Image 1 (cartoon, rainbow, N blue to C red):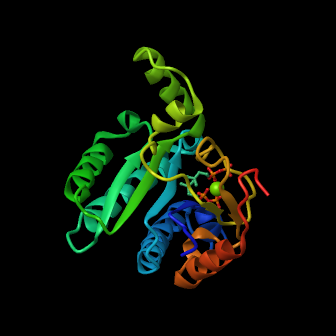
Image 2 (image 1 turned 30 degrees about the vertical axis):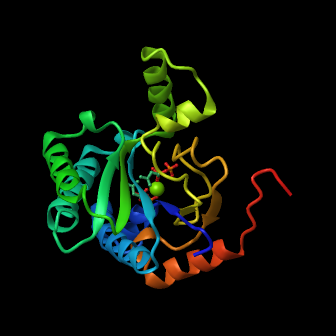
Image 3 (image 1 turned 180 degrees about the vertical axis):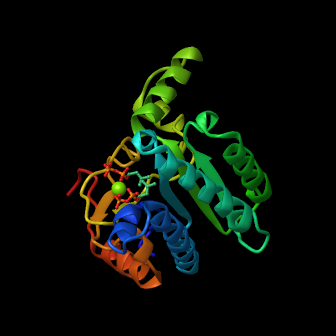
Length: 224
Ligand code: IPE
Ligand code: IPE
Ligand code: MG
């Protein structure tokens, strides 16, 4: 697949999907979980080695408590009823400030990590209470604490994703054209793709289109 190793998704548009149907925003998040399952299945079918998804940002705490609570409940459901199941072959990581999450979310996160760590089919990174700036700051703090040299390589190696390939392509749904603090260090040379489809409407055909589009891109990394 054109050397593609890592696709990252900024899953956006759940709220608009719901509001346009006269539903509560939480209904959009529920539909968004279904879309996530479809997209992961499609990525696995296309042999994508690593998929990262932005599920909750460090800035999303600004939302109403009712919506935040609904998102966390859905993440727990996703973990217990899907990601922790034996029949999936995904090694699942959760990256972000997990200590600040409610304990019922943290325990489901720990459970999924434990049950999936030896699976080899596809690596799935769920970015949860994640912020790219905080990730960089934490990496540098760790290097300083350990008395290590600060270099591009050492900062990269101490990011949450340090041992994984950088995202080849970052896809954002719902027409917004910004990164919103997502993978800003490791995304320095990622291809960017902005699609108008709202996240809850994403399916297998969209994944195929993303892979086709990636295949048309020429990556130069500053060369010719
Ligand atoms: C993305 O959908 C999901 C999260 C941020 C958790 P939004 O909830 O941001 O949807 P819009 O942007 O309001 O439509
Ligand atoms: C980014 O989406 C965060 C996630 C997808 C989890 P937002 O909807 O929060 O981003 P902004 O506020 O439009 O930049
Ligand atoms: Mg949004």
